[in-house]
Amino acid sequence: MFNLLKSVIGGNKKAGLPIELPEAFPLDGTEVETAPRAECSHKPDHIKADVNHTGHMRVFAASDEEASALEAEAMRHVRGKKTVFYGETAVSAYISGPPPLRLITITKNGDKLCTYPFFNLGKPLEARITGITECRNGYEGQLEIFTKGSTLSFFDVMYFKNKNLYYPGKEVKVALSGIAYVLARAGDASDNDLAIQYENGDVDDYVFRGIVKEVLEFEALGGKARAVEVPLRASADSAIEIHMCVTQNVLNEKLRKGDYVSGIMWLHGLVL
Image (cartoon, rainbow, N blue to C red; front, side):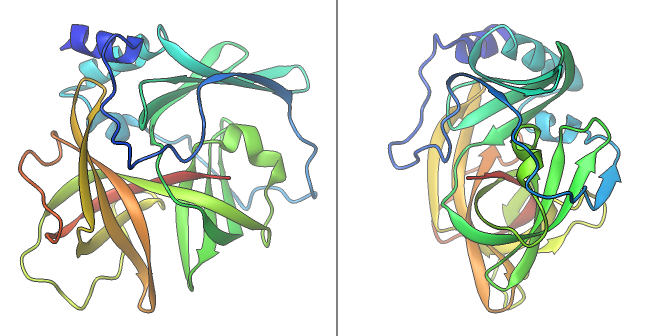
């Protein structure tokens, strides 16, 4: 398994990205910039403990050890690097893995802060920032937004780069996607399809139900996965169509357009 992961992350194995699924945001290549000046004096609304990404990584690995090996191998085969200087502090994001499923490793002056996956799909969505939560490490964060008549929270994969540009009330465009922790067929469709925050998870974890709009297979970090388009209905009047990554570890059976499913997803994305 490790050799397979090495070949995929290193680029010797072609990615199975369907032509219908262009990445939401270009990540390859190298960029170096100075952090933008803060647009206002607003500080994060909340400071929280650093995010534990173990659950996010385990959907791609059979064990914690395999997940750790995957993280280590990712740093040996970097496809993109984005560095932002906050004064003398250099914060870098190392991007590895073929699209659309990427791994992002954040470092501060060369010391690793975290590694997390990013399912880089999503259509632009008009939104307004209503809240900002920053992790204690200072370079991970979650945004609360108001869009299509409802409020959602998501993990911002580019928080390290854009944190100085955020403040409540700012109008933005975002691209959101999901990674499924749990997914199963749910029998007959229900009128109660409202997505709710998972009470045993973080603010960006959602329990949802809905009808599958599309299923496309691709290769993700050495295994098979599917990009599943489902509605995320956070209000009774509107829904957001989300592309969600579903690995074989999560659901190892056929999934078809029109299936009614329920599950738990990690909602993440970025401000465009």
